[in-house]
Image 1 (cartoon, rainbow, N blue to C red):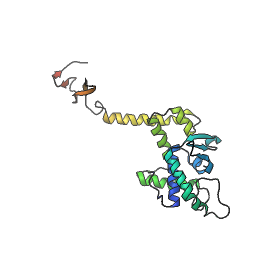
Image 2 (cartoon, helix red, strand yellow):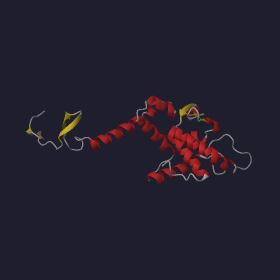
Image 3 (tube, rainbow, N blue to C red):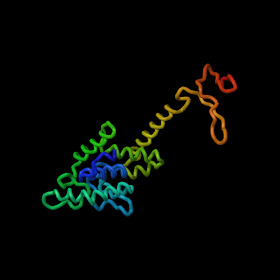
Image 4 (tube, one colour):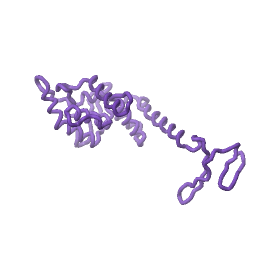
Length: 219
């Protein structure tokens, strides 16, 4: 999905940089639109988000790959877009539109939707990247309080949706892969630090059939 834009064009390079920022930081659409040129600190690897939801400022990490694409955009595409503006150039805004002005939120949604749809065949836009980042970070072990801070949620209950998503994913994996859930009983014994299967057949009438013959019992 991140590779969808044509980075050989100014707008494509801008879009790739925005996609990377969305995915790396979990920023909201309006926060990316308002992002200033001085708000990305490449040395410290952080982004300063001014007046996010609830008019609250926050600082969030940004990854090295996202910084790389932002630098490429700033060096090669932004000057081209800035030159298209009639009158005084837009000096403070990071991401510019086709006419050199600050990109409009509706236009940003339209372009992100195009990339999401082309890559996945499903609807989605800017929030897809925020949602994916939070879910994957939680799956990787990120604390829910850290995610709350990064996403700028006022209430922990808002962030907990990503916990629920992870649990649902685990339930699906469990249903598809656990021997009992897949309709198979499974016994094992330790062998050389591993587990050797002794049984992988459905139990019948409360009897388990193993390599030593039938063994009854109610358990």
